[in-house]
Structures are given as C-alpha cells and as structure tokens.
Length: 108
Figure 1 (cartoon, rainbow, N blue to C red):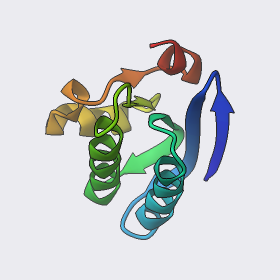
Figure 2: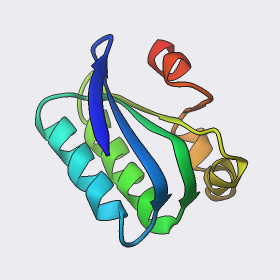
Figure 3: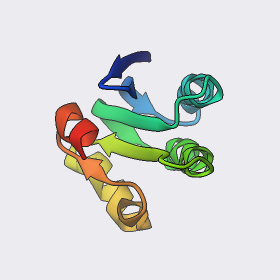
Figure 4: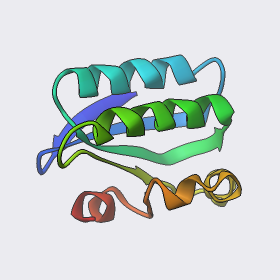
C-alpha cells in the first residue's frame, strides 16, 4: 500500500490481492487518510487482480466515512475486468464511481 496526494486528493494504491488477509492493511491505510482529515479519496486498484467481499467492505466503510463530510468523495481505479465485475455484480458501481486511470478519477 502507498498513499500520495494528487491535486488535493489522497490516492491510495494497492497491488496484488485484496482479500481477508490483506484487506486489514487497506482498511488501516484508508482509516489513516480519512482520520487525518482527507475526505476526497481515490483508491487505485489498477494493479489488483483479485478483490473479495472483505475488500469491498473496506471500501463501503470508507465511502460512509467520506460522505459524512461536505465535499467528501470516493472513487476507485479499476483496470482488471475480473475486479470490475465484482463491483457490477454487487451494484457498488452505482455508489462508487469506477475509472480507468488515476488521472480520470482525480478529474472526476
């Protein structure tokens, strides 16, 4: 996991698999970002090839946190169809905007 600022938006990047073993790491990173006062967040999953329900739960939790603040937002970068399919099947793609690049997510 890594985090950087891009145009005033926190970009949290993950790689590999986000599952029951690695989701707590993502949750910790996102909690630190939102707990530190940043409420505009992009989660870059472009290098993630597997995402399970534990990872989705972390993103929903983060969505709730950022929406508690005026101007708060969460967007996700997804390039793997396998990962995008999880969002579509659960309907989360209607709540969390999916983007093909970090640049488009930041601009969006």
